[in-house]
Length: 148
Image 1 (cartoon, rainbow, N blue to C red):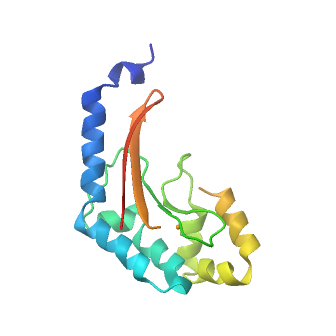
Image 2 (cartoon, rainbow, N blue to C red; image 1 turned 90 degrees about the vertical axis):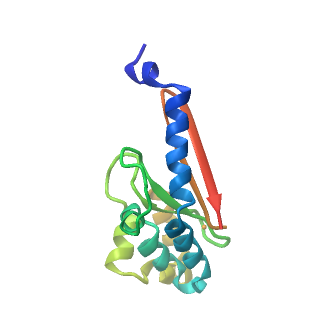
Image 3 (cartoon, rainbow, N blue to C red; image 1 turned 180 degrees about the vertical axis):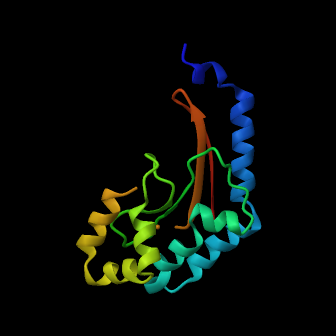
């Protein structure tokens, strides 16, 4: 039996879910989600890239678990796909977050000027305003989510 499967237990999943719930209900996390939601649509992707990264949320005191992959996914009617700010599954650099940091208005401009390119960027990388977290191992997952 793989080591990860031996370590998996209801208590472990309960602990991870509790940590995620504490992060998702933290006042700074909720405030960041609301701020992005309340940003004018033509500036929303840039605002999300600034506020919803794991680094930004941790700097505001949100207790995101250190040993878990964390990402904020942003869904919005009219976008060709969701936008993911944060850690990628393979540990590589997040192109969307990098582009938004280098040129803060780029994603919002592409939404209007070149939706096909934005779609390609979103589908090649890793928004309703919602947060969702999962944790687990050996094909079992515990998760939670929240929306503002």
